[in-house]
Length: 207
Image (cartoon, rainbow, N blue to C red; front, side, top):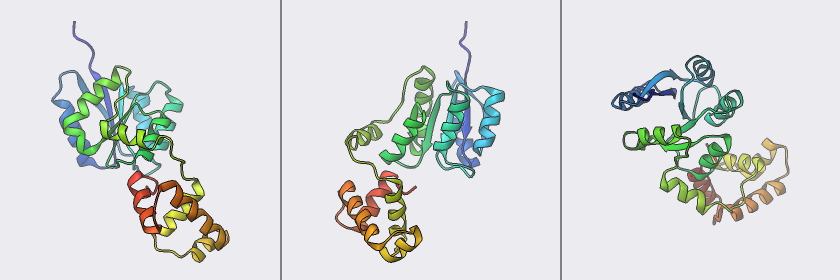
């Protein structure tokens, strides 16, 4: 007696990538794509109808972020199994996705090599996290996280904005901006503003 096929829902706003995902999955005899969506709203609607076993979720969607999409999906369907597909290697995004309820995290560059394995692992009720991502998570496990305000300040810094203008934008004093920058540099282990922006961008804070 053959086992039922693993039903997969692909959520990404790039049709070419979705076609690539479908092509990879169609090569396998134990799974099939039962739906495609380009927004969170579409994903929720299709999930209700198709009840997929595994959802492949992009982090950058046109309506809300993939993180919020995972939270919305899991709020409505608490047993939904989600694998994040992203171009971002940063530990911050991976941590947020896993905290939101994702069971897997896969870089889009790994789709051809690792996608079907990830689907089978997550469908079996386990987690799938690439070794490089897991190592990054472990490396920064005890780091102090940037606050929402510090991220706002750093995003403005990445635009080349001065402390005075940042303060005006955020309705805080220039001295407070400087205090936030001091805290940011310490938390990221950065030597200056430019270094801090580079580290924060690589880790996924500025997405």
